[in-house]
Length: 313
Image (cartoon, rainbow, N blue to C red; front, side, top):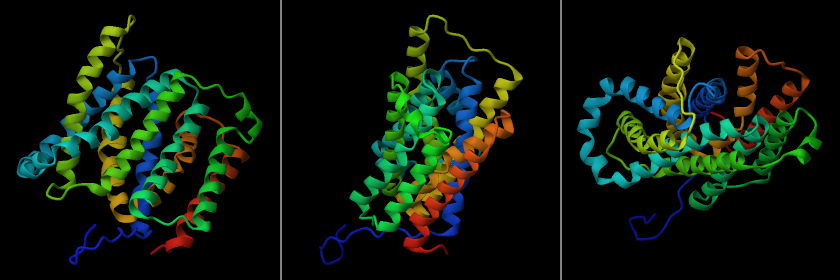
């Protein structure tokens, strides 16, 4: 951006620090539950309806506490309404709808592999927009992290990659990953004047509003449309509204502002590790040496790509 002398200067990449890293880890942990819940509710309701109910409950939870701040910040929000609409569509409305639809129509192995493209795209965008360095250590860390993710996804057998078949669900997940990368980059351009609570309250309300026509179209185009409510479904929806929505969005925003989108996205690579742990705890899936080895590769790759570059405070 131009300085006082009219010259253009590059935006310095934020340094890695423990606080920002913990926010990214916490957000990723809660987001990993998104895939567990999506699989759990596959037969209970259509994907866009699930997303709409998520935004409805999240809005109802947060609005009573943040209405005053939202009203106070409205002039600043109104001045940058296009930015908030773009952030909502990429980071909430379309991302959630595509993710839940993809979970209905493709294998978990494919989803895991494709999900890793979002941090890669974010790092590339951060390099182009913010001049964040890609040192040899950083590149090596990315490669090691990706290798760990792949090792986990294919259960230690890389030959399984040859048998993958990509179809509509894979393309939907790829589109969702691209949208989340754009959203993460957009956080660095967030206008001043509105608090984080106002930002996310508005985002949830706008996500609800923009999900309504998508849900209506889904209802009209789905022949066997049905929603089965039960205590289990209610608990799952409450989790979606509170954990990977309200809490995770706040934490991810704090992380990106603290350590930058590139560093935050490297930590996002731990998503398959957390998903595996949750699958073991909640779905009683086996955890074996493949999970342990891949987890070690993922964590070592993240440390290699971040600690050697910036140092952890």
